[in-house]
Amino acid sequence: MYARWAALVFCLPCTGCLLTNSVHIGPPQAPRGEGCAVTFEQLRYQDAISNYDQVGAVCANVTEGAADRYEFVRRGVAEEACGLGGDMVTVVGTCAVGKVPGVEYGVFRRRGT
Image 1 (spheres, rainbow, N blue to C red):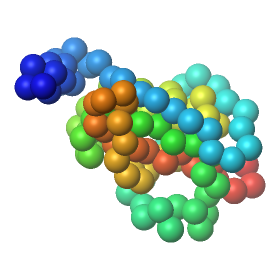
Image 2 (image 1 turned 45 degrees about the vertical axis):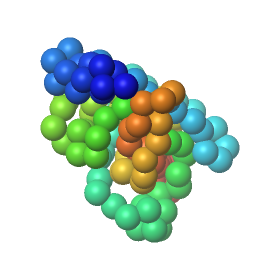
Image 3 (image 1 turned 135 degrees about the horizontal axis):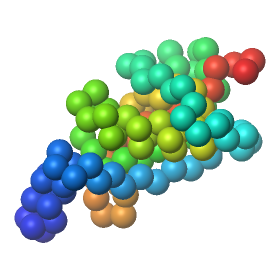
């Protein structure tokens, strides 16, 4: 177990590896183009759903705040969010990619777009 965690800890800052798992929530939205603009917000779930529709979720094998510290995490999560049709993500909880714990990002799309 220790070796797995040690590899993960060294993997993130050194090589930029990222494991993700994404899922649609609600009716599937058309994917947005490659390199679409996705904003990372720090919102409570209740505040997010007051202006946005949740279109999916992305689980990434990172700790909370990693998207602020590592550009490769932002790019990876944003790419998944674009594929789900979203334009904003915010942390909504914890999750696991296989047996590796991670952070769940809610993927949202502004209403009316």
